[in-house]
Length: 322
Ligand SMILES: C[S@@+](CC[C@H](N)C(=O)[O-])C[C@H]1O[C@@H](n2cnc3c(N)ncnc32)[C@H](O)[C@@H]1O
Image (tube, rainbow, N blue to C red; front, side, top):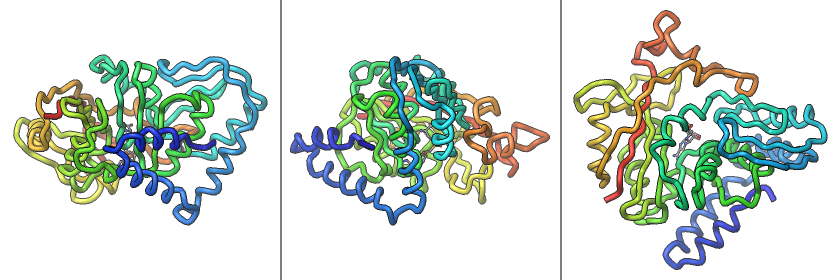
């Protein structure tokens, strides 16, 4: 089976409080995978069905590269199939002797935030989860269940492939929907992650409000986003592109981010980390052959983007709902 959504839907439908929301989630998820929605879908699904034969003997969700060991029938053929699902942005992954060297070394971000997390037995939502790299790491750190949302179908297909290797029985789900699926007062999750999404949203306040709606009272938000330096309540709204990205909207100072969170009903805002993104962390590889951060920075001055804006600086903050 390509996806394991049914078991999640069954769980959610069992409670009268989440039943009607679940119906909406199910409808949108199934619609997203209608063949007319994406001309590449058939090719990606063919790759899924061409993974070949393998036997997984050991899985490590806690390694920097989420890993499976065992026997594979034809590893050259498997690598070719996996390369058909390019670009691989978030990872890395080690499948037998194949190292999926993704654009992002996502383990570096995980290393910065995981010492501050208590995930044991927690019900987690990861909004904008990509192919689910962090979800595997969260399960490795003891989470009870991880639900990821990402509207980009290729990443959902990459997740479907990875599940085959890391464990189809695990309670890790990635659904092809965005943050707008979260309904008011859902109050379902102990911890909600939003990493690398806020600056892509035209309405950052609505994004924060929806994250709040997903949380149980007293639940915890882990938010990672691009910020700018400064003491004041200021925001950078790029004239056009930022680091070549067309879809970047609001980059606040930490002071403004804190105020935004408080206005959206969060308290106890704590800054866990502030780090510049480096060309060691984000770069092109065999698995993501488009341009990457080294091409998006001013070649003479890596403190600036090619457009002359401050180079990417990322903050991770934690906040409590209510
Ligand atoms: C910069 S990536 C971050 C991925 C991952 N969370 C990380 O931190 O590495 C942004 C992700 O958000 C997804 N995304 C874009 N709009 C979204 C929305 N409205 N709701 C949820 N995810 C969204 C994109 O498809 C992409 O996978």
